[in-house]
Length: 168
Image 1: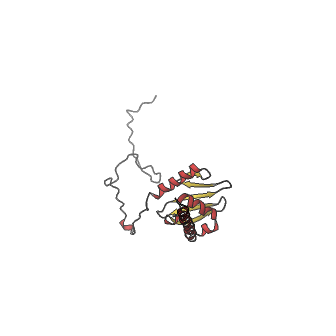
Image 2 (image 1 turned 135 degrees about the vertical axis):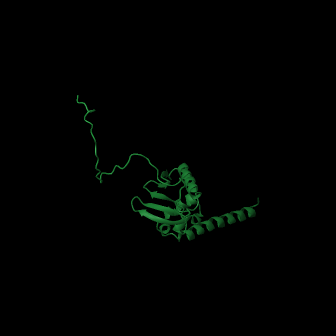
Image 3 (image 1 turned 90 degrees about the horizontal axis):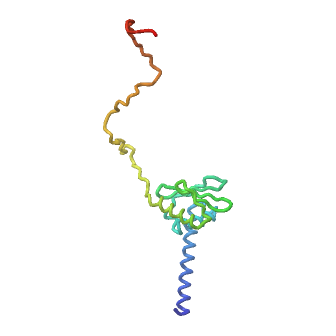
């Protein structure tokens, strides 16, 4: 490789890097939280790559202290990002990942990829189309136990045969 080829290669790589940075800035403008909290933008890029805009629906600022964000994905799933003094914490499906450690950051990215693979939550447009028949046949059936309510009074006639009753 000659010097000219090396320079041309470096120039093309620099253009690619800056193009990605511009793409991140353009995508971040759609989300107010990313412009207010630049650290959040860096974490989201680490977890979802520079193409994060293809996967995000919205970002909600949930709590001021500790600063907590709900990241809503396009498929209806979400995960939580919490900013602490030392690091960010990603909470995905109830499990916490401390993003200070590289291996936990990788596990968090894998967990996010897993919830992205669940696909979109499908709901029928017309509630009348919902199938409420769950199989199981008809009727209730007698499960024993009887009525245990105390609100009704029942008259009971008891015939006592005095010949069979013995006192001890």
